[in-house]
Image (cartoon, rainbow, N blue to C red; front, side):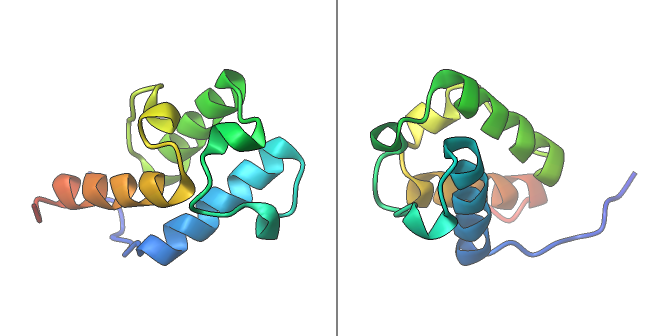
Length: 92
């Protein structure tokens, strides 16, 4: 069962994460600074779990529910996702 290969970039993941987080926080994506901790925007545990679910659904990656706290900024989370994609493809 092979899915089509999609090349993700740090930039595309940062954009996707900012858009998704903005949706949960009822803000515009341009208001989400990738270097600011998500907790400073008021991201709560419900939104963090929803974000994990969205990542699993859109990218077929299973993540720990604490991922938004372990990687507290959009930049850190995007980098972690890049590492996960690399590990999954065997490119590590």
